[in-house]
Length: 432
Image: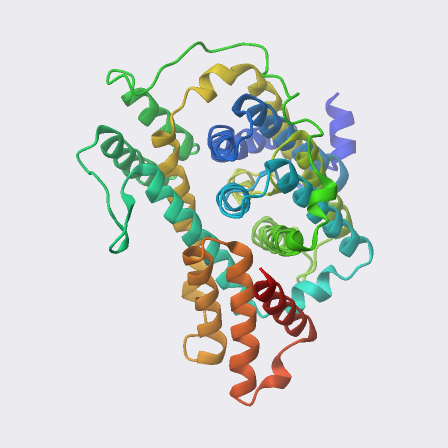
């Protein structure tokens, strides 16, 4: 068995061992397992059956990670993405009034588009055509968007007619527990303890038990039925012109998210070439795009590569065996649905805020001494959060980038792809 694993994953060639890879897979799982609790909570607000969303999350994470491990042989795990799941629920379904079945159809189409640009080998052209500041602004904007949702879920921020938003009731036990959960989460992360998010979420949920805010109904059971969501996606509805911006937002965010994760994680692992290119990139994109389409068919928002994989890489993971180990752990979690589904929203909301703050770090890398580059990127970040729409924020950012560069006499610096996206965004906003 050991010899087979060594041959299949080229362990010797990558200077690693079976025990090291299994430990790395466990480490990655612990750092990202919070998605099993948070994703069903978010998707349930879109009207998706929470039990089915839990099963879909487990399966999507397991199948995506397994594909990455076996097809691409990289220690990168996949799961439904944070931020994009919030966009799915709060902007597309609740904000635009799109049925969740149609939104799942848009997720599937975005995955198909991702696959096509990978097969046609235009992915590098598209990614390279988007200026780095705009990429940074998009990532930070999703962080701001997620942070606003996290603060709202914690009860720290509430709607107020006079000021749009304001401070919530800090004396509410749920708010106090949520705040304490965030502080615990951040403190454990500062100590570099694996699973800091999951530990804090569990602690917050347990703190609600004596107050009657959390009710557990068991630990182990058969997985919840997938029937309410399996193959319920509405492709015909997703092909409507009004859904074009949504499909593109899912596609662009997924593309940038995956490319950013690859650069960050594989660079740390020493698995990139000297010129910065990624070996077996086509296989990686196949796993990523396939994961998004399979996830949509199962009943969850976009599946993406997780930056938390860096924790497993730091623990020594160098091959796809680590991803296979992570996949096996996600499958095992299918049996703990009663425990995961009992976790209340006030316990998971701090995780949204925690992830959001980490996603805002790229703002420091904007070229603030060049207003033509930095200001449109910063606008992108703010617009994503305050229009409550990733697609709208991206569109406004691209329009601003092209316009500012043109007025600054630097219109020739704007790529054809950016002009196309800016014009398409302007048209879509005008007809909405």
